[in-house]
Amino acid sequence: MGLKLNELEFDWLKEQRLLETIEVIQLQQFSAGEAKRIEADFAYLKSKYKITKPWEFSIDSFLYTILWKLESGNDLSNVEIELLQNNNFTQTVAIIQDLKKFKDLKKKYQATKYQDSFPDSRLYKILKKIDTEDNLNDSEYEWLLNQELFETIEIFEQQKSAKQAQFTQLKIKYNASQHPYTSLSSQLYQILQKLDADKKLMYSEIYWLEQQGLTETIAIAEELEQKREFTALKIKYKAAQYDNLSPTNYLYTILKKLDSESQLDEQDLTFITQAKLVETLKIANDKYADTLKLKIGKSVILSEVEITWLNNHGREDIILLAQQKHFEILKRKYGLIDPNLEMQPFYTIMVKLDNKERLDPLLVAQLLEQKMLSRDGKIAIAHYRLEAEFHEQELKRTGNKWQIPTASSYWRKANEPEQALKLTNLDLGKIKEGNLKSAILVTRGAAFRDMDELADAENCARKAMEYQPDSYQPYTLMGAISYDRSDYVEGDYRFEQAIQRGAKSEDIDDELKRVFRSTKNQEKRHEAAEYLLKKDVKRYSWAKSYLNKS
Image 1 (cartoon, rainbow, N blue to C red):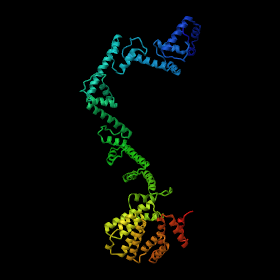
Image 2 (image 1 turned 60 degrees about the vertical axis):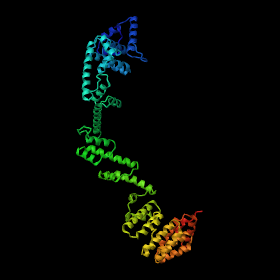
Image 3 (image 1 turned 60 degrees about the horizontal axis):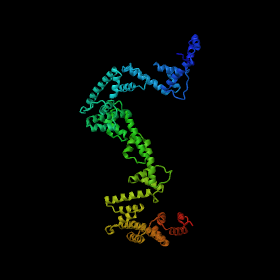
Image 4 (image 1 turned 180 degrees about the horizontal axis):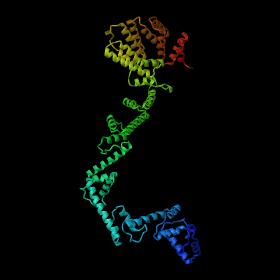
C-alpha cells in the first residue's frame, strides 16, 4: 500500500532476521500525491474513530495502521488494543468494543448480509433491543423488512411468541389471568417479570395492581417479599440452616422482633433453643445486652427483670456499669457532692430509700458513723420520713399509742412538723398513762417550736411537766424555748432541771446545737454563741462557727 512502517514493525522484522525485507522496504518510494491521499485518509479515520486533539500522530505512527485495520474490517490484536488503552484512546476502545458486539449480534440474528458495521448504524440499535428482548416499534419492524432481513425478523417473531407464551404462563402463575391486556408492552408484563425474577415491586407498581383489582397478585407479591426478608434475616442472624421459608413460620416473627430491637420473650428464646440455633441465640443475647447498655448510657434505670436477666447471663460487667450510673444519679438526687464517695454502703442505702424500703440497723449505724443523720440532708429526711410512716402504720395495726410520740418525733426530724401536729392532735383524756401523755405533749410542743409558735410550745411543755414531773424531756423543751426567746438564764435553769431528772450534758448540748441550726436570725445566733463561750469556751467551742464575721 505504500505505507511506511513504524519502529515497532521494524523491530519485529529485525527480531525475525528478515534483513533483506527491511532493505527492500527502505528502498521503496511513493509519490507526493499518494502521500497527500494517505494523509487525508488518516484525518478521516481519526475523526471517525474519535481520535481528538491534542493527539497529533503522523502516518508513520502505529495509530494509522491500527485505524486502517479497523476500517478494513479486521480484528485488532491484544497488543494493539493495549497500545490504544495506554495512550488513553478511551473513545476509540469503546467503538472497538461496539464493533465487536455489533459483529457478534449480526451473526447471532443472521443479519451479516447488511454491509454497514459501524456502531451508529440503525441495525445495531435494533439488534440490541432484540437481544435484550425489548419489543420493536412499527418503524423498526418496517425497516428490517425494507432491508430484507427476513431471517432476523423470523428470530424476532419466534422470540415474541415465546414471550407471549411466557406472559400467559406468568398471568396464570401470579393469579392475574382475569386481566384483559395481552400486549408485551403492558405494565402487567413488566411487573410479572419482576416478580418472577424475585425482585421487589415499587410502591407505584403495587398501586397499579390495586387499581386493576389484582388483589391476589398483590398477596403473592407480598408473600414473596416476606420470603426475601425472611431469607435475609436468616443470613443476618445466623439461622440459614433453618429450612422453612414460610412467612407464617414463628422464626420469621422472632427475627423481625430481633431486627427491630425488641426484647425476645421466654417463648421466643425457647423456640430458638429447640431449633438448635446456637449462634442466633448468642446474637439475640448480645443484642439485648447492647440495648441495656444503651439504656444505661441514656441514664435510664434498669428494671429488676433486666438486672435478673443480666445476672442469669453472666453480664456482671453491665450490672456494675448500671450500678455506677445509678449511683451517680442517686448522688445528685440526694445531694451527695463528694466525687470520692465510695459506692458502698451508700448505693445500697439510697436504692432502699428510693424504693421506700426501711434501712436495717447496720445501714443506720453506718449513716450515724458518717454523721449523715445529724444534719438536714436529703438522705436523713428520706430515712426519717420512712420511719415516721412505718410507725404510723404500726399504730394503725397494733393500736399501741406509744407509736404516736415515736412517729411524731420522726416527722419532726423529716422537717414535717405539720404532720407531727396532725398526728398528736388527739383527746388526751382518753389516755390513762401520764408518761405517755407527757411524751405526746413533749413531741407536740417541739413541733410547735419548729414552726416558731413558742407560746403553744410552752403550753405543751408545762402540761407535760404536770403529767410526768420526774421526766427531763419537758424541761429540755422549756430550756430550748427559752433560748429561742434569747432568755439564756432561764434556759440554763431549765436545762439544769433536766440534768437533775436524768438528762445527760451531751443531750443538752445536742439540743442547743439544734437551737442554733433552727435559728435563722444571725444576730440572735451570734448573741447566743457569745453567751455560751463565756460560760465554757472548751465545752461550747462548736459555737464559734456561729459568731458573726465582721
